[in-house]
Image (cartoon, rainbow, N blue to C red; front, side, top):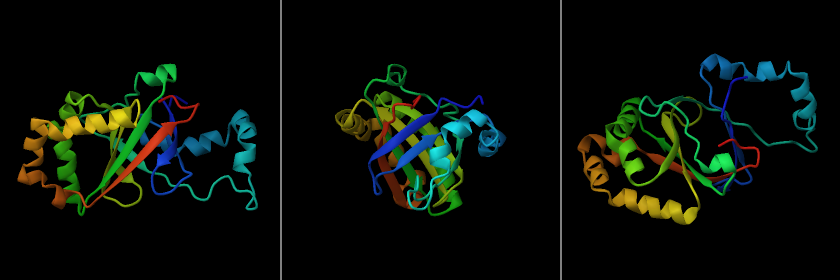
Length: 199
């Protein structure tokens, strides 16, 4: 259907396990909105997914499904899989969601990324996968981004570099981006890719 690369992940560290996430990038809202309708017309898919799609309440496939629609940040418009995805090498992902108290404060947090935060991530050696503004979803207004690492040790080391970067200290001390006023809650999840993941 021209969508991808698709990420499929299991939650390793977070509030509710087991949990799984599917990341499907698309070039248009229409392509994503019509995905289920198009799959329902695909006989091969329906046959392969029959057990999952037609599970009974006695043996359900899942408890709940939550869907969010994100728009890529202008400053990071394309999903960027880590190099390790091509070889299926060991990798983990950090999925962070920042909730803001108002639309105006949310816009300021997004602006902060475009005012140097992307560059600080790269300078600290991070591998960003995507940055997205939530258009439809829960706990809005919020933004979500994903980073990739070889393991938890690398995650901790890179965040130490980030926190101590003089550019970060300068940016985060700007009163326009005062953390307490623009972010009210952070959700921080650690995911690992399923075998079928393209990310």
